[in-house]
Length: 410
Image (cartoon, rainbow, N blue to C red):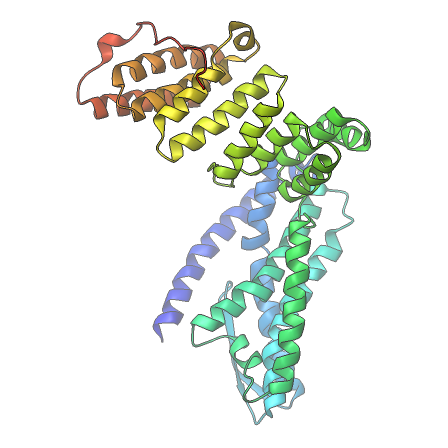
């Protein structure tokens, strides 16, 4: 048994464990999953099911397609390996190069057909959760068949695509495969960017109805932005980007629109890059009316500065966000806590540990007022980090007034 086979078997065991766990969870929550709306939690569960639950039968169909092609060409299947998340078929017989090519491509066609069948079966199901599962299962089979598996075959000495792209043996068939493959990849890329494989998650049926009403109000700037924001928060980020692009063509000077562009530029891991910071600053320059939006724009820009190691620039952003008592009164306690937390981090980055410690104390008060246990714990961790960097106990500073937030400097 080769090293690759042993490794694949071990990975399959891990996958099977998670698949069983997920299947039990789905069975127990079946009635809830079928009910509306499609929530974020159901969305995440469907995403996982598209891989851990839908892949095992897809692998079986893939290997059966190989076997059927072998039988059609008069060969025999001397070994059929099925390991739930991977498999193989060992044929016996004399095949022409074209027949070998067709046997190899049959597996990929089987995988694509299986994914399309799930989507077609569930696309009109009354449950949006099941429709979403079918859509994501189809997307995964497209991704696996058109991108992952060809790359996998390129770097390992096994895989159907080594036969499919054997130009020396089957130049015409391999050339046709390359053209069709490229066309399908282009279609998949465009469809994915257009959000064809997305569905929006909502916290309640009322939120879903509100989004539908907002999306229908095409002539209303505020309604359009609210609909775009619900797309973003509901996980349909590609759809949100497309809608925002059209919105900014119609309203290029919309400050709130550019703030939405900043939020959409944050990556899936929550990292904030230059594009987010620039869009946030453009929104501020255009004049955000809502104090909460202004604070959020400064918060995004400050986070970017912290991630690039510029504590002074981050402090300036926080000073601007925390300036003006009338604006601050409009912020909820949780947002106030986050702003003071970022200011504490910017002070720590500059080595101003005592000021940073006091700032954390103020942030803790706002986190307590908001009932945010997660934020409170993050602030306690931040306080420990400040003391570690300072190299001394700073607890005597607890309760002292935090450094004043001056007016923003140029």
